[in-house]
Length: 162
Length: 282
Image (cartoon, rainbow over all chains, first blue to last red; front, top):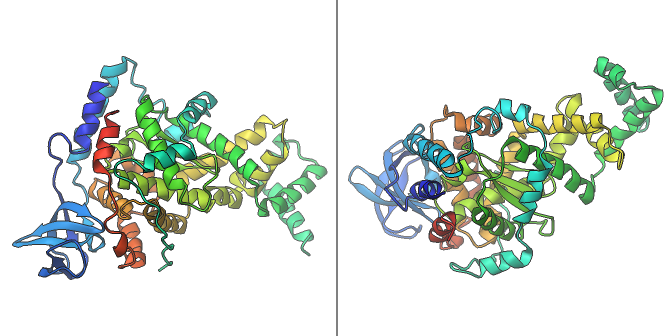
């Protein structure tokens, strides 16, 4: 169990640093000093500029690109594919956690969510009963949302189909 | 003509199903029934029936991969999911959320309000707004009945309209064959995925449902960027990438829809600390 928690903590970046992510600008993009549109412009990214993504906040990504650093709209950035070190690192941690905690045999190849495994899956009504036991009522959810940080209802229209 | 058309479809379908019809011993009455079934299936499945189909669907998913044996994490995901679903157009469904013990990166919705996320995806999320975004995307599938419609449209006779309505009409004394066919139809959707437009719609709606629930609306965008950064050849991603448009096109579609529309909600919380805490069972 402890190993599993450690694995999640690692994944969340609470423990050792998570690998830095890189991406690129999909269009010419102004770099802002703060994460909002009327903040001071501190530079401009050319289309396809490579960036390091250091964080995200409310639709903005904090980036570094060459000598420029600041905030750009998240949706102006796409990530470079194949930065998979986090995946492989986690994979080994998770399998250690699973074999180490419960002592049960790992059932790889028997159950799972790969194509073949789904093809061979059988309904499991017992497991479904377990699931029902974890359900939250409307009241539970409202109490949860009143916690810290508080989640406040907002009126927001659906986005138009582009 | 309106009455004759379904019958004609039934006759063609029955002829096409060949050996299957022999197997199920179809006589003329059954053929007429099939015609009626197709007609019925174009009507709405009621909420109770939807829940029943959803239960079968969810039983299959937890049959494929067991639930994660961590009650604290399961309850946390249920609270987030229930709160998010309260901000959809179907707040009073019997919503149930769960974490599947699988390293695969994926999330699933079923008719009637079951939503399942894998441990693999959960472990790669950075905060509660991201979790809320994923669950809101799945909630949107349920609200728009994407899976139910896909089953009714039926890609091939196996998953077709008659399977859904045949199953529903046999209340109390459901044949093993009808149930097996329904399960076959569900598996087909799990493996082939929904229409791309359904996924794009669930992305657009998911962003808004999460925002209505008070989260940073960009949680889902952040998840899509994370998915884009992974190695697409990784086996943990195989099923999700086979059943969804690639993250790049999903981001492009959201980019066109969002613009500056959500700017005023930019300061809503991501709840990274609560997410970390909850994953540790505190």
